[in-house]
Image (cartoon, rainbow, N blue to C red):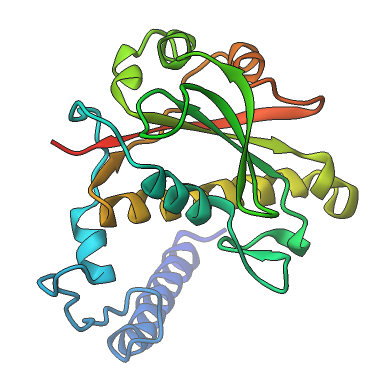
Length: 233
């Protein structure tokens, strides 16, 4: 190709590209791209015991005050996790297809009027069913790769999933739905706890089999979350 024509072609392409940028620039200024920024009204704390205030106060707590938790506090925590709210079926957290694949266990060590041990929470009837006796908090902390601060919480909530309850309808994606539900449970319990003067944090590092054995999880149940909950200092 003649050098003159090659130079002319390159210049045309350059000018075309530059002009296209000029065309799209006003669109950017008009806010028709993802770069548009919208200033939102401020969400401020200050109203005592409001939901916003709870969100401001919530922290991951690993230091707990010594003493005993009340059975009423435990009741509120478990209701926040999986309590039934209406039609004797629907619960405090959303669940894909209302299939509720999660099971909730309470590892209790320092609760007034409740023997130390492992309990399964039964949403129907809002009841605890004792699984084992004895304070198992230190054993559980050991199974969390020796994060021994876990044992300082008055109670530890263990959340497991029976995936078959949702995968039968939703296939492999049902596992994701169970994880979403578990996240909702944790946030409910965390905020409910703060409203009662209790702190918590999520523990995800643990031996699955050891934790499942400790709470006597049924066949097909897999532990997802260990959640120590204790009195705030």
